[in-house]
Structures are given as structure tokens and as C-alpha cells.
Length: 319
Image (cartoon, rainbow, N blue to C red; front, side, top):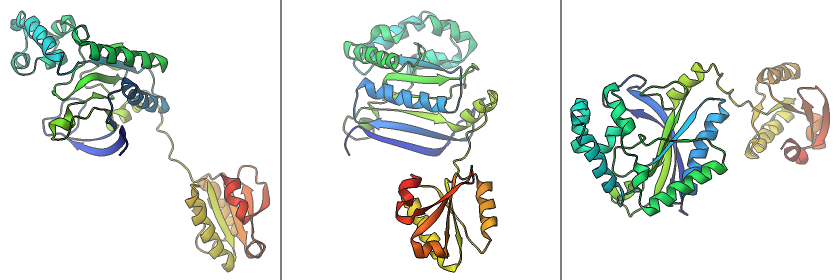
């Protein structure tokens, strides 16, 4: 496929480890991925998509946290500096961090234990040790986000623990702070496809937790967006008109117009009452006389005004 290939998924996710506060054994996630290009404009596009999604839900007081964790070329140098810093304070580390110091020092910055917070806050920042290519990538990303007027905070403690993650890391946080408060996040994983046996392929994406979003909507007392309503109701009068109404409803749906079709043998009055209950904008009424004339009655359900229109013009008028 032409690259970058842009994909999305919606899926249940299952956690093996014991769930922490704010996490579930099973939760639901959706995400977007752009695979095949390392342009920082793609990173900004992915971040903007997540940011605009939250805006569309009317969630407010959110913050975007951003970092760059470098690449295979510059990360080893930073890890050496980080290990040296933490080695000088090893007696202050929690038991988990003493293990991380030997096995995965980048995760030291992500420790949620209160005793480790001051050390992580004062640790050297990765962005001071980026190679020229990663530094340029990060600078361009920040410029793009400024162009999009998306506020962000560079946070050197924002990391990923797996080696295939590279460069951009981001999270979107709600007003309430907490170890599991992030609504979603993502970043670059330029090393993943190669690690799985494919050719080197840059990629960037995000994952958003649906349960977290629901909880945040409740916390901010925001009603969930309404389910999309059908736009048109097709009613008929008479047996001959029934077949024409069935055909017409199918043609409207194929034109991308949401349709509810009258079924059964109810009166026109009952059909229109049903249309009102559904909240449709327009009703199309076909009787036997309209079938003979090749016309339909187009009724505005808000004003109750109606007009007779040619059937072959109906799709154009409704669209």
C-alpha cells in the first residue's frame, strides 16, 4: 500500500498482571497508526487527531505532555548518564527501582513510588543528549504543534520501557493527577516491525482507553454525545407505493443518506407520528398517484411544509 499506511483499531484489551487502581482486567481501546514514514509532521498529525477527538467530546483542562527518548544511536549515551546519576543515589531507591537500575534504567523515571519522585524530578533530561537527527526531529515536531496551536509541556520523565520505542512520546492528561490518570498516549515505534522480522519501517501511533474517557466525562459532568439519528423517513400509501418506497429507501441509503422505511400496514398519520418520534428532518411520502406520476411528496418535519418533487431529483435535493 502507498506509505504511510494509516490504520485504526477498536478492540478489547486483556491484562495479565494484577490490575492497579484505575486499571481493569479487561478494558477497551481504540487507536490509530501511521506506518512507513519518519516525518515529524506525521507525529503532529497523530497527536492532533487525538487532541481534536477529546475536544469533540467537550473535555476541557486537558494537558499534552511531550518528550523525545532518542534512538538507538543516541540513547545508549543517555542511559549511561542516567545510570551514573542513579548509582550515586542507589540507597534511596525503592526495591523495584534497584532492579530497574540494572535491567531497564529508563523506567526509573517512570516510578510512581513517592520516595523516588524527587530523584526522578532531578534526573538528567533525555532531550539534552539527543543526536542531531533526533534533536531536529523533536524541534520540528514542537514547531508543528505550535502551528496547530496545541499547548504542550515537555516532560523528561515521560518514557517507554521497550527498546523499539523511539523519539516521540506523548500522553494526554486530565485535570485529576494520579499514577493511572492518563487518558491515552502514544509515540514512535520505529524499531517494532524490524524486531518482529520485517524490514526497518518507521511508525507512529496512539492508543486511547475508552473506560478512562467515560470516567472523565462523568467527572466533568459532560453528557455523552447523542447517537446519530436517521435523516429521512420514507412513508407510503397503498400497495403499489409500498414496492416503490422499498426501492427508494434502498437508493437513498446507497447515496449515503440515513433512512428509516415505514413497514407494516399503518396509516399515514401513524407513520408520520413514528417519524416525529425518531426525530428525522424530512419525510418522503409516496402514494399510488405519485408512483404513476414519477413524483414524491417531500415533507419538512420541523415546519410541516411539503412539496411535490420528481423522483429522479429526490437524492440530489436531500443531499
